[in-house]
Length: 323
Image 1 (cartoon, one colour):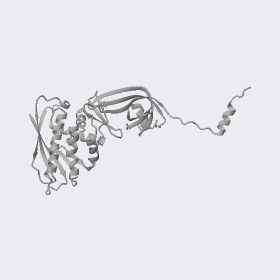
Image 2 (cartoon, helix red, strand yellow):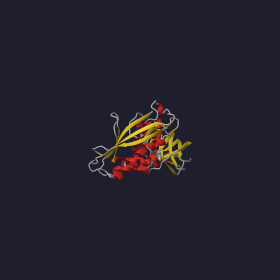
Image 3 (tube, rainbow, N blue to C red):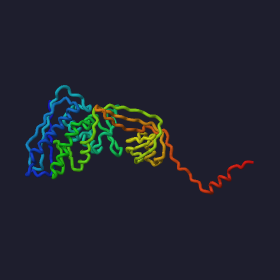
Image 4 (tube, rainbow, N blue to C red):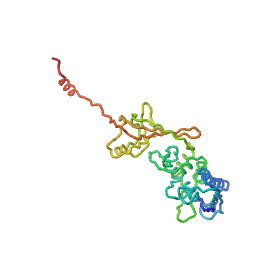
């Protein structure tokens, strides 16, 4: 059984009468096809994908791709649905289509602004949590994570979806439309450039090995951060060292921060349970994040009271004299 999906790749605001240089557009089209095939390979789908292209049509410049998959052996139960490894799921994971519960590669890149090395594996749920510079988080599937962290996806994604906006300065967007009426088109515009450039240059972590070290009852002091309980990426001082990024996962303490009952100051001291979460990939690159899982004690800094001369004299009078 084979599935066929028609997909339109469009360069918006290109004058179709003028055309485009075939030597410039051909590599882009080839890399777009390679992107889809690479995603299929990275996820280990047991299907073969044929990518063909139809003749160009009049209007703003676009090409119509025809994607067809053929199942090779067994179809695994993907996403616990009866759809198997179909093309629509693959396109949703890449961010070219819409499916409930799927963020897609594009949304992860936009959320993290291309800085995709700050994540935590959730082994008990088979998901991955990504954090952005503000400490906000999104939870994605392992399949989405594998795609984001693949050099094959990283290289082709930028080259066929962002680089065309630089090659053709008049183009206002690259849009991808699955040829079905109920699926909105997905656009990549000039506002995406910065995030996708950072992603193209990002250090990726493939086939990672996790190591978690727990330190119970250690003292830390706030260093920098918006300590308002909004799960931002904090920094703390432990001994003579500054640790960053640190997330606070103690919900009861976060509630005190959010309510304003506690306002952290640089001289405050917290006694906490701290997790050091390290990730090592096959190239021995190590990434370290920290998490405060429990705040056992909050020791508020009290400014030393300054005594004036009257207080000193008063205290002197209160001292018992020797008989």
